[in-house]
Length: 318
Ligand code: VAH
Image (tube, rainbow, N blue to C red; front, top):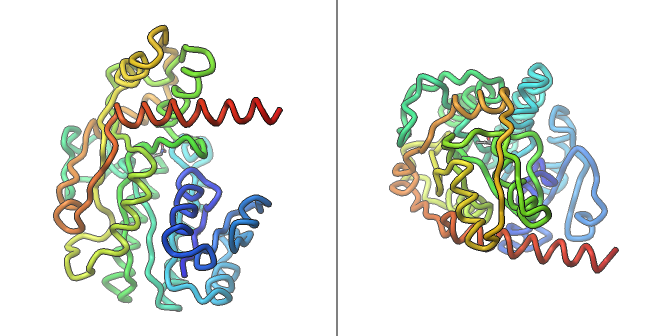
């Protein structure tokens, strides 16, 4: 049985759906800071503030879970706007989850991010093992989180595993407060307005991944044979290295009249420039057969189709 925190978030919502399909709805306990009627009808769901250790322990015990997938966190741009709150939630929630996993002997997953790298990190084909001196609160949280998860593995034997996610793109739940969110907004705006004004400058490369590949990576990693893992927290994984104009070209293949303009947000641009242009996923491929199904062309086709269908459904319901 798996407890997912942040189950209403960008990753959590698609992860819970996939886990319910794979392991049975009754074995997946969704949780988030707020309740959600629709979610509660699909399977077990609990309101959980991850900064409350006792609450998390009680829920894990009540459902006799054997795994925690901890996704509740503030993303990079929001964390930069409220750094102390980000520290309290991102680090407080993580250490609570690790303590519950230690006490109840649970397997534990939490994502890191390409945000765990900083300006001194080699930017192209960033290695699995390299310097990590991020200059954002989010990045500080992610590096500290990686070290904390490795500590709980080496010190207490907790089976902790993680991946460094690139920017994630999904049509189900939009991201909240990330730097890579432009890569999601652009699809919605392409359909709605046939135009998009990017807050990230052209020629700014970041790693990206379609959400189905991101969710499959968690399942692949968590089911991997532990004896094969030389690394644990956290594996570099990526699928696509792209700049805003790459999305424009792909979208124009489907919407030729699509227009792109730029109005750069200095805060998120600065964050983006401190991150890698492309990262090396070879350790994940070698140690747990990481693979991806979606490149930017296949992702774009599916995103436009799924969002169009979603918008049409919404209109018919109105
Ligand atoms: C963010 N989407 O923008 C997240 C992610 C690599 C980016 O960490 O903060």
